[in-house]
Amino acid sequence: MKITVEDFNKIEMRAGTVVHVEINKRARKPAYKVDIDFGNEIGIKSTSAQITDLYNEENLVGKQVICCVNLPAIHIGSVKSEVRILGTNSTQGCVLLQPSQKVENGDIVF
Image 1 (spheres, rainbow, N blue to C red):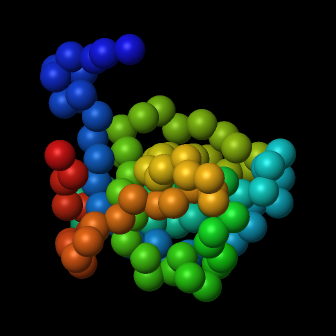
Image 2: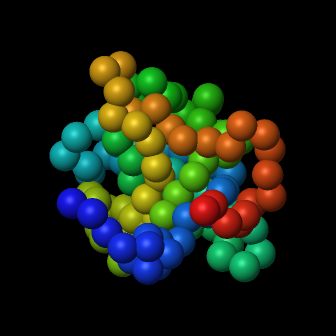
């Protein structure tokens, strides 16, 4: 399915830093509740992410990630998922997309 450039431009993607991670105990599939800092403009947002195959709580904290920040919030278990972390669907599991160099929290991805 193709989308227009105008549709793509509606997707707001930002860089943020993971500041807290814990198991999402009420999710149907293994998942973490992840808190991500997007800087002063957006602040800290939470999400539930099925990224337990390759990541643990310790190696996620401090990692910069790319997220879609303007989708409607949904509840996954008891977590209000306010953003979506972007990753690839590789044979080894979800590999997170992240900047190749450190950037400011909240920087726009285009």
